[in-house]
Length: 604
View 1: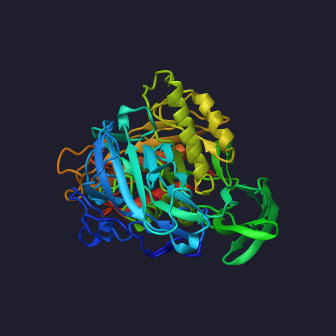
View 2: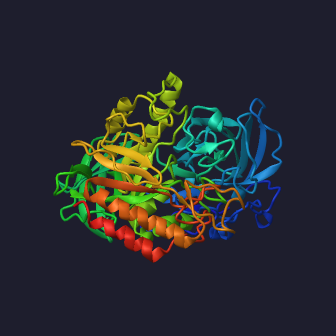
View 3: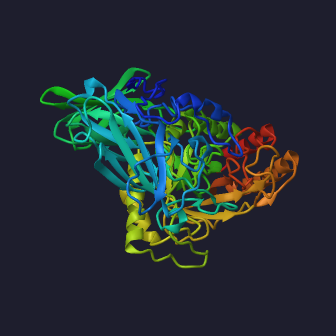
């Protein structure tokens, strides 16, 4: 049995470590193979059952010891009304969804079926006497968990993480059985689901069911730091720290820059602490400076819990440029925000990137192409994706995944049922809580193009109450209600600009959609789809450059941001800057970079 010990280096959060597999396996790790999908990325060859996604999954609340449960699990698929199965006829590679090739299964699951996962694990002996927490990064959608036959937790929500206290259910020595049941109605239900559908077509894609982010265990003390909210205030050169703990004590905070202490503060647990950074280096896409943070919980003069984290000092706001136009400000200066619509789909892993290196690659490529922004489109990523945005310097507009019914541009907001509205708000609040510390995230987007849009003014107030430090884009697309911090239009191919307003910035939330299928790099050989279709890279490049030429005067005259569709092709949609397998950039890169960089000096 090998326990997984995380490195203490906050700079990488990545360790080479192996999960323990104490399962009565029908398939040995050496014989496991991914399913024969239609398209794979270069990182698929690096995926193995011994160590899929070995990196520490929670980079902003790091403890020293943990046990990674990713790897081969037993799997059974039953009808929704069937009891817990006696046998598990196949295996699945966690954390890849059952529909994906990298899961080894690649099977569609309907709303009338339920997934059953099973594996065993052993705890390191030195964990005896500690509380044992079982964490799931995300499971889509409704989950029930048992340990040694005892139910230890239930959860609804496909995009937020959850934790089960399994202390009373685990055995301190020997194998423990873990069983997870998952049901997902996809678009047969009203829950947040983004672009997942049972019948993929055009801009709607294959669904993700079951465990799709890292599952892991950690030992914790009874009195501990449960969560931390970090809010930078660059005007006062202060980081506000709100640490939630399970008991009374004192929080001590130390900020470090390259190993050098640059600030300390302390205060009673449960009360805000102001940590001064006297000579703060501000975070921006051009200079994504991050500070390390060490937090200690002391009780009765004794250290009872320690965590590591990080933060960036930056501010997002609205303000005026030299011409009096309302702009998006970063660190009190106007900045034109420009980048792709980012769907976060992978041909071999669907919602789950093959590796952490693959996640990083997408962000590095967008930076290299000359963008400073990604709009994460109706999907929430694992924490590590945002970590790389923080580390590499990419701004993020974060969409809430859509669900329920849709409306047309001229329709009023839908009337959700009380249960549907409550589910949306609960999951959105959890997503905001989980992601709030990432300096890269600068805007929340509750609704896209009327998908599930309801009570728009109320939802804007709801989001602002949860996070007053960021901007709110109430509705990206054509269902503006005059609220929020921006007026957002979509135009294909565009570009266009919304009318200028005194109190809101004008942004172009989607434009472009220029399509080019590249033979050998598409999800299917024929009948691919794009908003506008081209046949050669040269023609595609020329069309893109023409869009940027049209964009420039809009920026000069007040347009504050633009989002190009999109980072990559996704399934039959071929509007990507890159092919779906990330093998090719489809345009002349040098010309695109030069065009993109021309517009950043505008709108100051």
